[in-house]
Image (tube, rainbow over the protein chains, first blue to last red):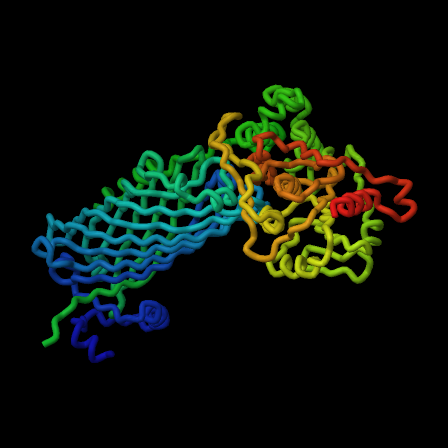
Length: 290
Length: 338
């Protein structure tokens, strides 16, 4: 395996630091990502030196949940999440187009204001698409594109009887834009990156105002599938992150803001979460076998 | 660059974190009453029907019960006022659930004779009766099957039903005693009813609220009971009912009334034809309310109960002699149908 990686990957031999105390932390993330982080000496436009980047982040943050099918009250609590992302440069448009795929999973636990009931929920989102990259400055990479994605989840209320849970499902097309800026701080190479995804058009599941799941099981879900657009499902996800290199590991710390909303059939749903994310980034490029 | 990014983040957060609940009430006595009143006003499915049948105006209830509030009242006092307000609906599916108490209006059964003596019923079952999950059954001396199903919350499987019907197949008829059955799972009621028909039978209609207006309902959807693919009962049946048959038991009686060879005997059922939903108040108390109404096969309301085919009540004199007049009437009816 090591031999394969040696052949496929260009290792950086520099930036071997003096931070022995970080070895344990590095080892944990090394195990999590099951990979060696391979970082170039300096940051340069993705299209030229680092064609593929794989990111694994875990995060924790606050969430505000509203689902009027279950309760008219807003619940607040904790959200634990993970985000894995792969971004690979393609040969399209003279290597200016990248392909990106993202898994984003969240687990939610929240209480009502009186703390007499709680929500437990989970959501898994996957989206994939293409970005066109443009570098107006040497260290600045701008990108814009579109993603196709799906989102599947549930929210369970510990106290409700015939409406104990709500399912969430959507599929659609999102606009996506981002920027990355490479710089040095305290002589360390760093990169600040930002990406925002905005769902524009798709389909989503939403039961009617007083429709029970018993009726849905009898009648099917055909009438509960709606066209989703910013007018009834204005949602948004943005990730602001900073990459920094310690020894041969690239770490990423960031802020993830995930806004999911729905307003249809006289029902309202939202999941506002703000999370601190931390993890590793693995950069490499594929090479042909000789 | 940093300023640009921060500005972008802030503007996005402001732009998108704007959706709020329509339920902006404080945890004060008035806030909780307003919240409960609005919840019933927008989501309760029988308001128009109840206003007509019971002669009240929900709009007037807000002012009437707001007048009973004061800022210094205790939680117990607030609970009493809120329960009093929703008791106007006379609906067993409307409850306020707190750590203090369960707010309820059980007038649908408490205002009428129970027509059930459990000790007497146990005498008919004897001691060697069979138990198939939630079902208790035996064969009476005149070769009549006697089956008791006390709660549709007790699950039954197709295996239980097949074994029971096989065991009772030598009998000349069946008494299905659901007196005191306060409901439970609709699926259990359906599963049992499917054993009493050989054809697909229209049993009623169901709809749900589609908006906040009192009369915003979906088109009623027909409900059918389809015959079970397992063993089915082919002989006369008497279903014994009383005022305590509520919710899923009420729906079961509605379904059985449409079956061939079935006679419903006893008192009017308790009703409860609205499928209940749950919600809550700012104080944290849980509220249950009827959300989706069901109707019979002629699109008539069954919220206040279903009349039996034959009215029979429990005779106290016979009870003193150790006889349940309702069971005896059912036996007599089945013997005469032989």
